[in-house]
Length: 188
Image (cartoon, rainbow, N blue to C red; front, side, top):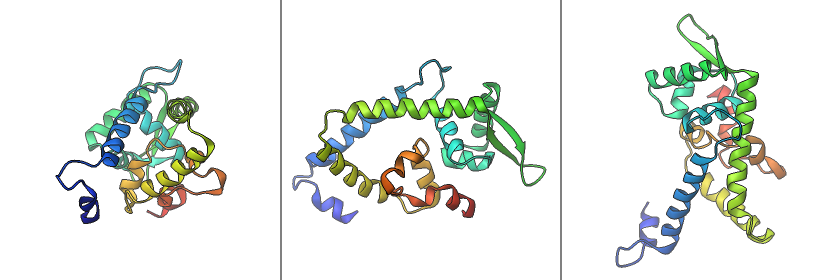
């Protein structure tokens, strides 16, 4: 944190880099929230994040899903109820009589894939005018930035709740938050 403070302009004003980063973050967030899959029933960002998370990490306990999405026990229960009613997930028995796991249905899997496609389209539009060299440099810098956002397991899962895991591993490069992979989740 001290290194960041020293890079802020001497008069206490925010440096241009940080300001541009903040504006970019807000604009991208707005685009992602608005990236509703075509022809799909309207869902909110939390429902979309749940579907994509369960696509990457199938058959997780309801409590795990709530932790990843930052929801209370009652909040995740209501979310799962909505997803069950929409035909996107089913509840299956957990490891004990009190717990339940959440499993995507075929409909839920298709909806999760549609969410990823809509996300990809929204983000591709943002970088479409960059040259191949600029794209490669931005990818490298974002990998560094994302890789440094957290070293803890649950915050990393929360950060990647809408990520396309296949895209992150394309070109032989792994996720900068490698501990979000299903094998790591199983151990976590």
